[in-house]
Image (cartoon, rainbow, N blue to C red):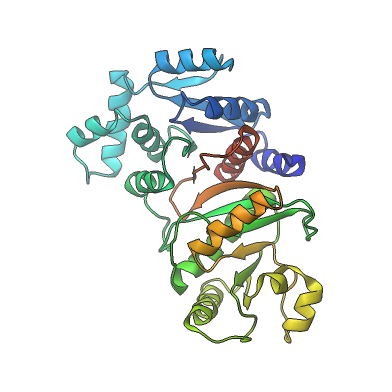
Length: 333
């Protein structure tokens, strides 16, 4: 666990501890990670579901939840207040349908977030990424101007020595299978905001490819070039450049040889944008398996309110980092 990363997240939250909803509140790793996050003072856990089951689970795992809020989806008065507030903002689903869905703690957690009863939702240990994205799309929707949801993570890579030590932001490793140029541009722009909120870095985004500045030609390369053009057109104030090979993006000596033009990003990138999910998934696994690095996230981006998915194989310490990352984004938003 990178203490610098943890300290940055806690500092980003400040004194405004965030109410994080945990709808998978009977899972051992979720409860233990929430306990660690709560001890930093940055998080106020809200456990969502059946109070009897949650209390029994916490006791069996040795997790002290005294003082934590339990949001029961079984208490009729509270449930109906959330349903009424949600229906007033979004009447695409009937009251009858909402009453049926509320029996699922994940649905209840997202409805609570939609009506500002909590600040963010953390899930994914017993649900797939696809399920979490579906719930976020259903109950929250996308931010105005964003065409595609995405994910971003912070990789802590032993032996890597970048502008911010061993840490590097990576996107999208979980959501978009084969994003087009418009989606890639949105991923880059959203990642800038996420990194600024969590880490306080000045974003320098590299659009990755197997080509650097025209060293190869193909439709795959064209896609990344067009993504750079769109991103710069949408947000000329941000430092987004490419197409770059990975080494040209993060290694100044390699960039000096391969990039024969001025660039604020080449050799100094702190955010890497994968061209597709094949590369993203493999890249994360390489970091974890060969570099023995941590990959905090994925933090879901583009939704109207903060949501985080998590890897079902992640250790408790990594989950704790994910929770704090989510809290930092929620506090900023």
